Structures are given as structure tokens and as C-alpha cells.
Amino acid sequence: GENVEQHPSTLSVQEGDSAVIKCTYSDSASNYFPWYKQELGKGPQLIIDIRSNVGEKKDQRIAVTLNKTAKHFSLHITETQPEDSAVYFCAAHARLTGANNLFFGTGTRLTVIP
Amino acid sequence: EPEVTQTPSHQVTQMGQEVILRCVPISNHLYFYWYRQILGQKVEFLVSFYNNEISEKSEIFDDQFSVERPDGSNFTLKIRSTKLEDSAMYFCASSEFGTLQETQYFGPGTRLLVL
Image (cartoon, each protein chain N blue to C red):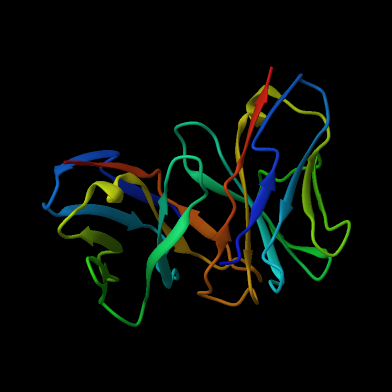
């Protein structure tokens, strides 16, 4: 089955700096890669996703890159702000026989220092 | 904005007891999911549910687990005889059609502690 690895587990950056979180996956059939942000007391919220037919996607300060050959994808947050502090999860979609199952990484706790 | 809700937010139970975790998916969504996250570990898929039956389940979802949609709004996860290792955060999620590459919306989770 699919195995998603995520690094680093914790990341501290100064406000205004960039943050990069990296994930690798094992199943070459995976074709959908969402990123979720989890704030304290809340469930994971989708912030951006990328599909296997593109190599990069950007949404304001957030960008995601995908390298299908190397089976890794990354989340880039530029001009970080204190409200970006949260736990970030990458995930990969690996369809079993029917439904839409996600395989998650272990999460990265991002702290943005004002 | 519509959201997935879960109750209770925390539950403490004795080993061997039955627990029912409740979820209200987004109202026009057709696919429902349960995931769990043991402390310090990955979020893991348990089961997906569509049209009043299980669509897919992982090997974690053994005979002690069951899911049900008892009415038009609730989606429940039952653990028949809890074990210590069932202690985890349980997340419910829903998606509109359950198609490939479709966004899944997660609830805030229920933290289950089995003593």
C-alpha cells in the first residue's frame, strides 16, 4: 500500500521568512496530493492540492510542487505570518477498489515567531 | 460555510465498553469517512461509506468496528469492546460525490481515551 513520509516534524521560522515542508510517497499510482492545515481544536482543513498532471500550483503565499519521477512533493509558504502557525499534513490519494482514500504523512508543526 | 461536526469532542471510557462516536457530515455530501490518529502517529484511513453501505475499509477496521447512518444527518462509528490501543483522535470526513481527487472535509475530531 501507499506510504507517505513527511519532514520535518517541527519547523520554526521568523515572521516573513519562507517555510518548506517535504513529503515522499511510495505508490507510483497515486495521483492526487492535498495539503491540510490543522489548528488547535479543529479538524484538518484543505489549503491546497495538486494533481499528477501538473508540476506546480500556487495560491497567493502558498505553493506546492510535485516531482512524479522522484515521488516527492513539497509545500512552500512565503512571507510567513503568525497565523500560519499550525500542524500541516501532506496526503496522497491511492485508490483501492472504489472509494477515495487518503494516506497521510505524520505532520509538521510549524511555528512562526513574530 | 458548511462544516462537518463531531460529538463528543472528548470521551473517556473503560476497556471493554462500547462507544459511539457521532458525526454530522455536510448536508449535500454523499460520501463519508472515518480516520483515526493515534498520538504522535499518522492519520489513518478506517472506512468509507456511501449509499448506506461500506464502500471501502482498511485492515484496521475489524469486526469490533461498525458504521451506521441511523437517520438523514448522522453518521456514527461504533467500537463494540474498546481496547487500550483504540485510544486516538477520530476524525469524520465527507465529500460531495466521492470521486477521484475530490476534496474531503474533516470534522474537528473526537479524542477517545480508553483506560
